[in-house]
Length: 608
Image (cartoon, rainbow, N blue to C red):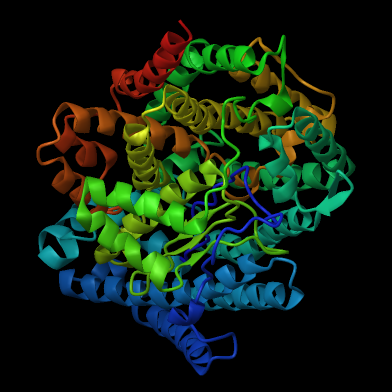
């Protein structure tokens, strides 16, 4: 019921700025949630939550089937208020923890609050369970009888989709309480990752700084970083294997009890997307590997003057690429101008993120790696986290996460039950924000060399978003399937990882000893199993949307804003219909993939 940290997006850029002058980087002001962990408002809300949950259960448990439309609406609105208060509490604790995951006091505060909220909300478990016992005819009649209630029907339809997989009330309560234990494995993963230290060129650093070396111009530094990452992952591989084994087994047990047909089914249900649509996406991308990643990396191999690409060359800058550092002010202006160029309303929504402490951009010891946008609750505002180091890709990460923020602001009008967008559509505004920023930069590029660098960078980002994430998805599918056969050794998991790498990256790569352990640091596998295909879904969807925008821009902006405002109130078919698009049509994905192919065509033509 609470809002977990949303959309963590790993990036290959972070940690100490190395003396670079990036300008004044913004920090979060969390006082819009609470002034501090000892704030009287926080205790007030916690006490209110305990009482509200108990009263909710007292008033409605065992009585849902007998409610008329007005009574049902009152129940929904009370539940929504509980969601808002619980979400505010957990957002504050979670964001505060992510600012410094090594601070034991913050970790304890998050853990203690999580336990209390779990205990307080346990009486609510009956809500979705009992709802699913209402007969279909009576269920439909409720929403037909009251227009205000009818607005909530999409949220309840998603709850009803879980009906075939629902367990007894007693078992569901047990699983709800046990959720805290599962969360502990995530925390172990986060704390282990944040506590890793890497020594490169005699300097001790965190994982984000070490990953950042993989984008250095100097090839020897990239190799040193890759080997050091492999060494440290190897030393900790037993811990990472234990986390993955335990979580995959926990999921297998739950799925088996629920009668889920596959490990992925729970994610598809929460994403409100049909399994065949995801498989069509997966199959289209895998079939396109030779036309996309294999072809692009062959170009890059020639640009780098190499006979064979090593894994530390995958994210290498191009030889003609500038090593210029982009200051924060320039990054902000670049993104804001691109947003305003599409529609001034988009820039207006984005402006407060920079001015009011809604972005935490700097790299600090203990800060969570990567980047994300967290929607908090609909009566506050989102918060964006970055690890900004001034690389061109950091500008794209800003454009991406700010896109999430704009989407979350627009969807907030739907309220707690309907604002949250399924993961497959949650990446729409973020990837679109990146595309707008890229196109604005490309339009300004008059020098062919600069245009080539921009195009190559975009292709690499798209490959990382589409090809790499579908390879990740295949790895997860194999991991969960293999775990059903018994405990997996680190070597077993390593082998599964390597089975998807050569296929996705192509024949021009060699894989160093130790690369087989690089699955260990990917947070999505632990935090959100099967999340990763949402990135490919979002990229393909945005590419198709952008093609529509280029073909006929008239009226596109209003339709686009309407889509974002809808939040989770509509299915992907209904959201895409105004644009003449349908994700269930296999040709839809080819439309998106053809845009990446077109960029590679242009790069190959430049070589001619």
